[in-house]
Image (cartoon, rainbow, N blue to C red; front, top):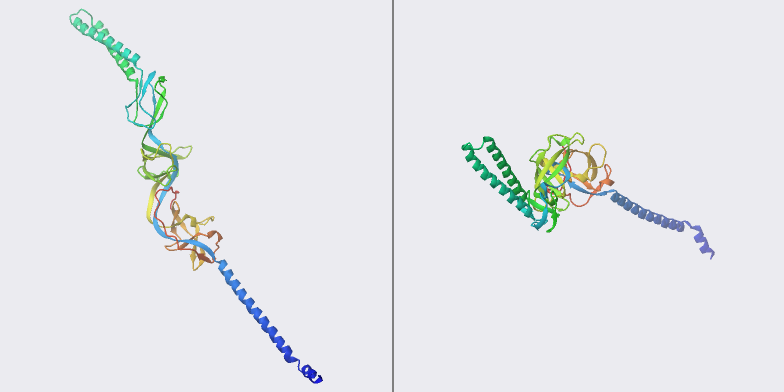
Length: 379
């Protein structure tokens, strides 16, 4: 027993060395694992730092400069039909929504009294005509004076006028349409007693419709008669209507600083008087302009700027805009064809930030024709 104890006591280093070796290997293994985790965290951090964005590749497309506004459609002509005489309505020959032509009979009133007046005036006229013929014979025989002949002629002319007046009153018993158009409202029924000058119909000429814009005076040099006009109405979404500028006021209203511009459109179809619409007047157009979506512009004060993706990083680029046409903005300076402009995700971007492009760059779409645009001018 003593021999064994002395042997182990005399050589303690090998056992401790083995223990130390195991501890060092364990620490190295932990360090290796920790280092691998840190590397993975760094890689994940790099991935998080890349901001996902959508981009648009600048392209060429037609773009127009235009003035836009809103206005209600009005008929070219409108008439309140009134009764020019009194009487009972024996027949109503038109209804709301019915198309009528100028001179068409709408209402027939009781005309007995007017017919009697015509007969009375006709008898008086015939009597004086006979008197005048006999007087002409007598004056040639010098049996009556020239003054007497003039008096008879005067009475005859007065009787003829009275007869025409009676016939005119009789014609008023038939109420006729003063203009061609459509019956917009009717306020009479068969059997009603109609007072003189009482409105009984409203007729609107819907063959041509007009829209009037009050345009700021700064546009007076750009808008001309004959320019094409596009119309979109709220009641008919997705549909476009074309017209033209027909009248421009020659003076500017001093109070409002505006002048009147009247555009005309074909009616008689879907468009109806009273509809409210958005009007766009194109006064210039470029066939091939470098454009970007309007949403790509940054909300910065000062010069307009956009973010452009270059070498995987976001670069802030100032641009010189031209015409603004709906969702598109013309770029006169600052970009070239094919530049990838950030359209979505730009809020989280900073200069030089890493970006990750999602999807493919959106191509430019065809020129829209039915939607109203925002006015813009080249800088």
